[in-house]
Length: 232
Image 1 (tube, helix red, strand yellow):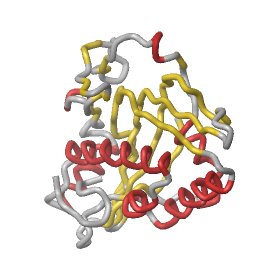
Image 2 (spheres, helix red, strand yellow):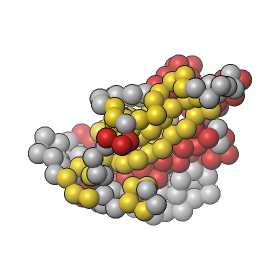
Image 3 (cartoon, helix red, strand yellow):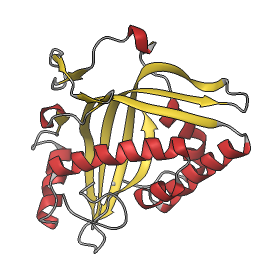
Image 4 (cartoon, helix red, strand yellow):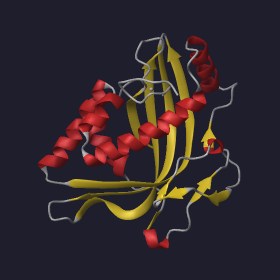
């Protein structure tokens, strides 16, 4: 994977969401319950979904170290068909920048996803700043400040990455954008000053997020940054 001092050091982002919109959506994006919810003690053994879209689910043990699921094997990554619009855009990116690789991009996307989710929960501005566009960082920082003012804390654990795939890709001029679908099992709960939950739940919940990263191809800075995010 490529190196960089600002942003995560690999190919990884569309047009930035309006900061005010992200502020309103932020708690839902990073702590929203979707699909099913189950207490940890009722959760079946860790599994990785290796299916292609529409294929039957295949379950195999997920590697776990110290209770934390390890990154998905490459087979769990989903790349668009080469003939699709997204596939053609990815090919155009590779022609414009010889260092670009969609597979390496997804590795970096997962690393960024983990860092951003945990950084937001911890209120770690120093970690978040180089990973986000200016407008997105302003939205995240505003949400963190609001949480601090309310004396709330957030606890988030990514228990398993079920699937990661590229949903869309676009190249306009030198600006490349890629939208990634993350399906993960998380525990995400916001606690009030008294320690009681005010949002989320202390239970493993499946979450689906669509995050768009952007980068100017050919620029000295190789970093892709999060420019938009929403729940699916």
